[in-house]
Image (tube, rainbow, N blue to C red; front, side, top):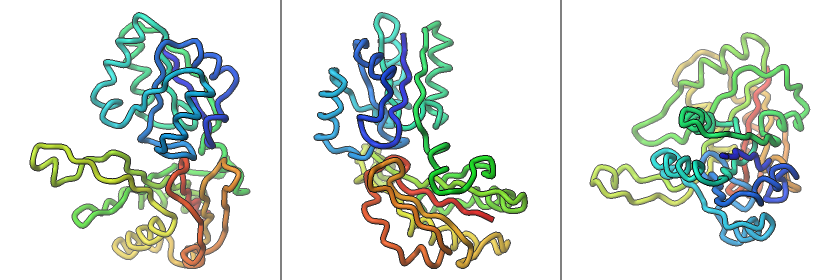
Length: 262
């Protein structure tokens, strides 16, 4: 059996009772650590707490393992029960859907145990869930890559009078471009997009495209550390949010969300 188990948004204690029972019954346990992170981020003490509570050794599955060596995880599930832990809900990222599809094609039994996700917990900001349009992701800009494919999606949402949930980028164990060109992987330090970076990138894209979709006075909601005891939710214009100190935005699941209402 392959179990895909949601961990929720806060820390290791947010797993459901059913999810915890499944983990404790498994021979091998992996925790995915590149599409999102729990509140302790990549800290070893957080992983130790998780292992102590769950009663199992936990293997951290980084991007390289999930995307390039998923077959190893699936092959283990042929002979024993394997748990694959996911921050939020198991189907919050296409990567996890792909894992389920591949397991089904191999004839494996798959059991999914759901949990809270940013997709529903975002309701904590006061905006009604059924008034959201298409969700977008905002990636880090580089000197040579400044993608704006999210811009027309925001435009369409605003034309329909719908809010836009913007999920901000995290980069964990990403190889540098220079090392890839040399054929030898050298990983960059972890990097987490802040609300300020996201707003500045959004405004740059607006200036480049000139579609008058939004501007510095557009009302938004900035959310940091959603689902944690110290979560922070602030409403205001983009310009006003740039002056807000959102605290530590470097170690929380779906750390920064900028929900842009009409």
